[in-house]
Image (cartoon, rainbow over all chains, first blue to last red; front, top):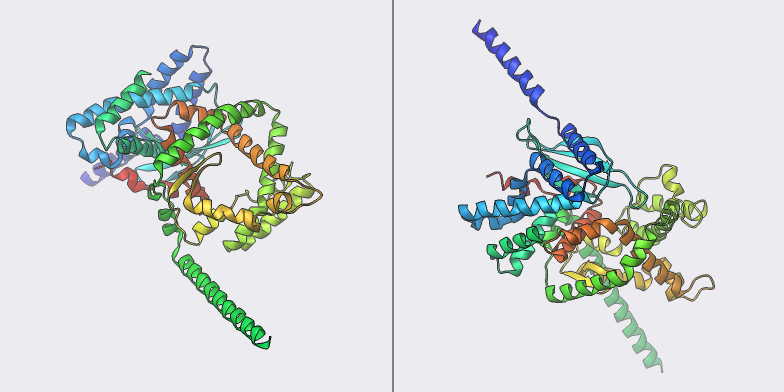
Length: 195
Length: 275
C-alpha cells in the first residue's frame, strides 16, 4: 500500500515538474516575441526602453552576468562592495541592453534548434532575419536552466561572439587601467548610467 | 682560374648543404609543433585572454587614428553603400569572397586540408565563369559547402605558432604579431591577386584594381556591421577593449574553423560564479 502510494506521489511529482518546466527554446521564442511585439508598438523610444527593462528583469540573470563579468576581481570584494556592485551593474546593464534593442523596429527572430549542454545550460540557436540593410545574423542564447521553472538568459552569442565575454574583457580593461581599483569601475558604471 | 672555379663550387656546395639542413630542421620543427597542436592546445593558445597587450599606448593611439579615419571616410561611404539595392551589395560581396579564394586555396593546402582546397578550387572556377566574375555565388546555389576564408596567419596558427602580442595597425586595424608577420606572405607571391595587379605588370590589371578591391572590402565590412559598430561604440565602457575582445574571439573561431559556441566559451568560466 505504502509502495503504491509512493509510486503515485512520485509519478505525480514528476508530472507536476514536467508541466511546470519551461523548455529553453520555448522560453527564448516567447521572450523574443514579447520584445518584438513591444518594439513594433507605436510608442516613444523612452517608453520602449522602460518596458524593455521590465522584460530584461524577468528573463535575464543580471546578477549572474554581473559576477561573471567581474571575473576574478569578484573574490577581492567584501559583502558591501558586492552589493554596491550588483546595484550599479544592474543599472548599467539595463540601460545598455535596452538602448541596444530599442534601435530595432520589429526584429524577426526564428528559434530553430537547441542543445542541452548539461543540467545547468542549454544553448538555443536562432536567426535574426536579414533586412535590406543588413545580412542574416546567427544568435545563440546561453540559457541557465538550473531552475527549470524559471530559465534565465546568461549570454547572447552573435555570430559566435559572446557578449558576456566581451563585457568581461572590457571590465578587466577598465580595472587594469586603474590599477585594479574597484571604485574606478563603480565610477565608470555610474557615469555610463547617468549619461 | 681552375682554383677559382673549384673554390666557387665548394662554396656553393657548402651553401647548398647549409640551406638543405636549415630546410630539413625547419620542416622537422613545423611537423613536430604540428603534431602537438591538437584542437585543445590550439583553443588555449588562441584564447583572447592569452594574447598579450605589449604596446597598449601605441595601440590606443592607432585605434584613435582609425576611428578618425572611419568617421571621415569609411562611415560616410558605408552609409551610402548600405542603402544600395541588395543585388548590388550581394554581387560586390560575392565577388570579394570569390577573389579571396586565391589566398584561401594555398592555405587549405598548407594546412593539409586537400579536400577543402579541391572544393574551393571548384567553387572559384564555377563562380568566376558561370557566376560572372564571382558576382553570383553559383557554387552555393548548387550545394557547395559554406565557404570559409583562410589566410597565412591562420596557417601559422594551425602549425602551432602562438598569436604573440595584440597590435592595432594604422588604417588596417586589429591584428596580432603572428598575423602581421604572416601577412607578408601575401606580398611575397602568396596572393595571386596581388601578383597580377601590383607585383607584375599585366595588360589586364593595374595596381588600382588591387587597392580598390581592398578599400571596397573595408567598406563592405563596415556597411554590413554599420548598426552593430555604432551600437557597440555607444554602449561600451571601453570601446577599444570591446573591439579587441571581439576581434580575438573571431580570430580564434576562424583558426579552429569552429562554428560551435561551446568551444569559444568554456563552461568553467560560468561555473566559478556558482560557488
